[in-house]
Length: 244
Image (cartoon, rainbow, N blue to C red; front, side):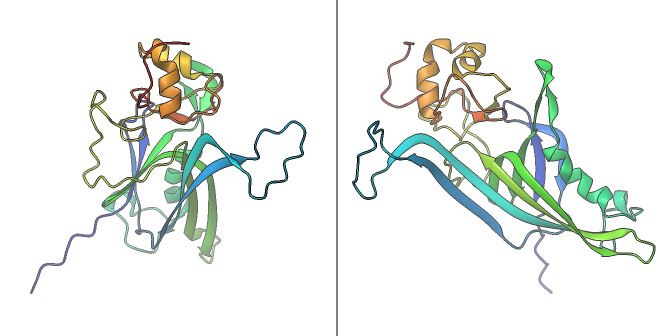
């Protein structure tokens, strides 16, 4: 008889600010049926102080895009569990491992600031790096004594750029690889109050901050959103180095 192909399970991995894997990983119990990926650009009407522009469909794209991914995961303590979890009798002991990814953690350089952990969703030839925007847990099935046995978890992830990944072996380009685009190398996560110039200076690229902002499609380089991901090795094509 032909051998059954090995079923690869999807994984959730915690990311360090530089985009590398941390030790914390969660292997899903059941692979999802569907992954939904959406892309969006922020658009605003053209700058018109008088408000008299009557041209239909007149819009202006600004330099900020986002990629979002949504997925639903299922957990069931009455199903097949790995040996380390066979004594679990409450499904929330399984789902809390996923809830970890939306729980803010103290920033490494300032414990008074909190950031959501970076997350990598990895399944076969599909990879998505970002942060968890929202999480919804539904308890679906209970034991006679009131213990939840089955649950679904809906995850919404986002990254602050438009990215269509086709890399099948998931090895990012080396940090100094020429021509690499923003999003193909390890990303750095902004803390509250961070600016592109400050983060670039921390990497020794303070004079290139404008080019880094342009390559990452940053709308407001002087004030980043907490948790926003940047490729600090990127450089806008055709832009001169240096300048303020």
